[in-house]
Image (cartoon, rainbow, N blue to C red; front, side, top):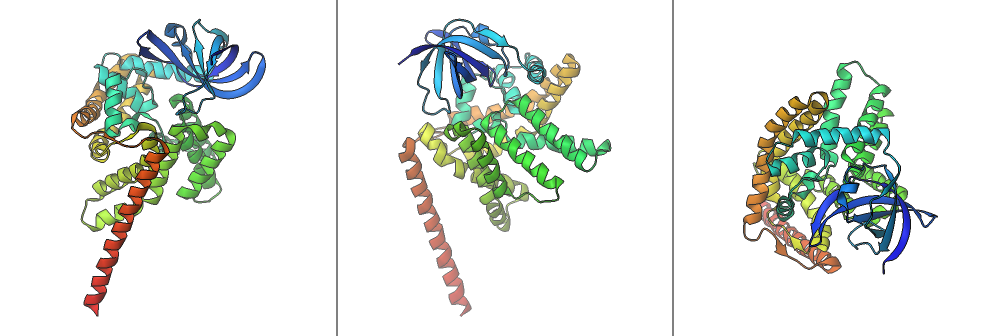
Length: 405
């Protein structure tokens, strides 16, 4: 069913262009606020046949369109999809903050403009989650090797920013609660710059709660902080309960808090170097918690995910730091931004090489049952592995006790 309607909506993310057999079209995340004069507030996606009319629009822009409403895809948090054939009527332009952030994002895209296609598409994704120029073949390689999370800006990127901003604030003399205010401002500014994707919003809310707790002399604990942040977000926006991105972000973070420390200690006790043990434990823990959610969506598992992430991690830090430097440099002097982006392409090419080489290997993606059946089957496999490991441990302890006696 495709019901015609006059819709007023606010853009919640940047438009991106996709291609079909009928030509290019724009995919635009929006928040619908009026339908035929009736007020509402629900997420939706505009599918527009004239992408050139949508591409310049920034988040927070309010538009009016003549659309046909149709059911949303089940793997999205949307209430509906809107098919639009005519250009939008702009009712109100973007906010000043979104305009400034849009200028910074465009500056980074321009700085990367002279790079090869893979680096040009990937570098903005690593820094600010902008995948508008990422080649489809590279996106497919990332999915096959479990590296898609690298362009979903979240807690790791925010940690990089705070790690740079807070010492700088202390260096110029900021102390006490003013330091907390600086931290809050940095978190909010980076969220606007990187766009409020589910993983970014989850990381930002947790960072805000941690900063507020630190300001009153309380120590933030991982799992309570994660639960509090997730609950607050769901109360504010219940539609997040339908978002795979939100579920994956919560799952990965829970894995890092619950499993990674123990696995890291176990690896270190077996002589694995500290840095390798940390990387392996964090990657495996996040993967273990995310996989039951992923298989329900993708109907496949990626055995190469852990080795691919370990190899790519060598390049992620330098590429992200240089990419962030290029963004700031481009805002001051564009030629300097292009020079730094040229340097950043080398570690970025390392990530691309890992993804494309891994995707070409046999067995990079193994078919699995989809939907709830796939998740339940995988959880059953987890339970079998856990029980087997527990039985092995019990036998070892029994033998030790026998030798002692």
